[in-house]
Length: 318
Image 1: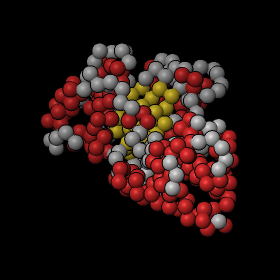
Image 2 (image 1 turned 135 degrees about the vertical axis):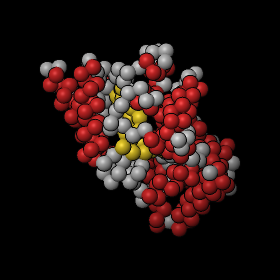
Image 3 (image 1 turned 120 degrees about the vertical axis):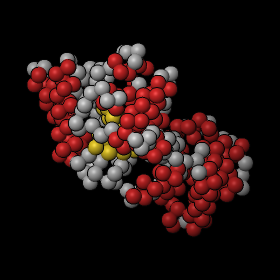
Image 4 (image 1 turned 90 degrees about the horizontal axis):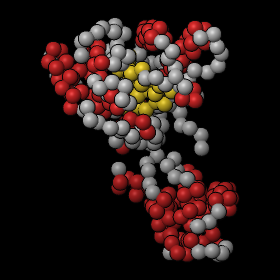
């Protein structure tokens, strides 16, 4: 299945993870880290974006970036190309530095930004690289705690979530970090909560996808698909699973397979396991249903009825 495009709109905030190619280190000495700082500064100046937090690990980078009119893809391309050129020059080598496509999750800033910044700043502690985040030089934590100055880093917005007064906000920030010292890996900051590319609830997903002129496809389960198909076709799930090629049941399986293929969260493999059938004939059945439905009024009506029921199920679970 093709990967979905990045969600872009002015003001969007992303958690970006950029990994070394094949898990290899991306920094060879502190000159490299300082050079990346320079490229990040130039990106802020050139693309009118804001960097709210960062952490440079051995083989990957965490960034919290807020964009303006220029899309994230162009910003990250500029940063990664400049840094790759620097590494290949300084190390007298050629080839890739970063691993394929960077990971970017759109963040509901009101609900998650503060916790995301803490999560990123505590990454070296979780990795066992340092006992305290303040002892780690290559993150934005020390700038937030006012122990160093990074001119291109934007800290005010995040600190304002804690306290309107700047001085008290720094104190509140340090306490907030201390309160999270035992925090473990949070999967939502790596895999998202909606569609694998958004960290936020369903209402936030609907809002940002509307801004990006996309439609949010709500989630439903494999059992929802099977149940809806059985109700529309008037058969039991045992009949749907039964061996043989009874036309009524075979068509129902084809409809189920087509709807699974249309879902961004389900797979034909899982349907094959559920129905105890090979995925190849299920795929052929799905294609046959898709081809026949426009000219077969009865099939089209049933397919539409199942889709309508799944939409109601997804809406009720939102």
